[in-house]
Length: 151
Length: 151
DNA sequence: CGACAGATGCAACAGAGTTGCATGAATACA
DNA sequence: TGTATTCATGCAACTCTGTTGCATCTGTCG
Ligand SMILES: [Mn+2]
Ligand SMILES: [Mn+2]
Ligand SMILES: [Zn+2]
Ligand SMILES: [Zn+2]
Image (cartoon, rainbow over all chains, first blue to last red):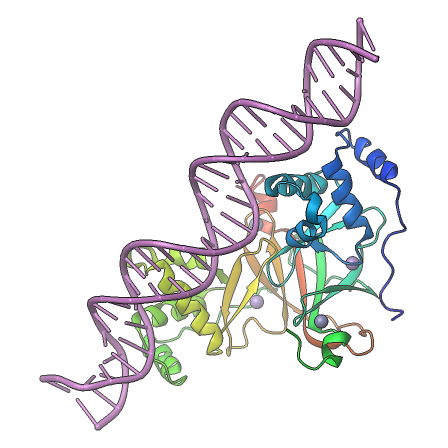
């Protein structure tokens, strides 16, 4: 699968703490752990994904919401609603989830990063200004197509 | 603004009732009224938009949910989540909201239909099948750019 | 005008996300 | 290294959107 680029290069915990402090905020375990998960993930993660991944060492639900919001506000991550209207978060800066196209499998719900270039945005009506353009593809992934019926 | 196509041609109430019965379901006031609103709207409407537009003659909240779901199931409308994760419904068949690009104003939240063609979807990894491709643009609309600060 | 499937309204529920406030801990500084 | 300060966390309570079950009502057909 040469079309799916690898996740960000592995990052040290202290590294992450440094990036967090660079924003002027405190490097807390919650922030480090969440940023670590997002950095290692091959695709944007939902709140629920993260809660699950934290497992035993789970954070308070509200704290996770706040950490995620903070990551976005501070510019370390971006959030985006997928077609199922769940927020998906991805780190920014590694340039990982930036400028390329996402494919969402309608069967298993996974999100894949394609290395196709973002399409050229069309001309806008007069007075309109463009902030973001996103191309969202959806369908069935290879695995779900192969596996017959997906649950 | 030649870039924003007009809404569907004005439709008689009996006309709408006819379209509803054609699906095999009953033409109730709730369905006619909602379909009428969607048909007249220049852009996809949210549940809240419709509740507001109904005003005094408002339906039960649950009934509106069910009418909207029914419209989608029956193929008379499509629903789509915007970037704020609110469902937006639009009639289908007039071909109004099909095959073109939407622009969402991040300030006032309105959705505009552009007559730019949908972009060509990129090649997918092997085994993947494409069901839908949507280009979503966002930024500020002409009105919000002109009016200074939008609420 | 009935009869009856199916649509509505109401109440109660479920889940995601938010807010206020008291407690705890990362950082700065002595 | 110890302490003070300020920010982050956890908890409880709340809001908002959407769903479910059930009794009542009504559009359609005969
Ligand atoms: Mn990506
Ligand atoms: Mn449209
Ligand atoms: Zn899949
Ligand atoms: Zn606007």
